[in-house]
Amino acid sequence: MRKFAFSLCFDNAKAETDFIVASLQERPEESWLNSCIAVRRLKDMERYKVALTEANILYYQIDQNTVDNARYRG
Image (tube, rainbow, N blue to C red):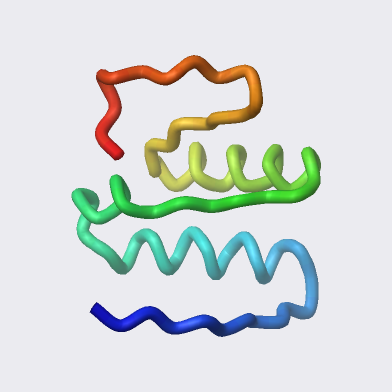
C-alpha cells in the first residue's frame, strides 16, 4: 500500500467543505468506514456535520469523552 501526504489550499471554508463532501460521494459507501475527518476547531466540525447530513452521508463523531463502541467497525 502506498501512502501519500499532501495538502490542499482552498479559497474559503465552503470550498473546503464542498471538496470533502464531493470526495466522499465519489467513493462507494462502504469505503466511508475507512474515512476520517480530523478537525482542530469546533466551528469546522459543526460545518462538516451540517454538510454531511445534508448530503446524506452518515458519520460518527468522536471526541475525548466518547466511549469505545464495538458496534462500529474501525
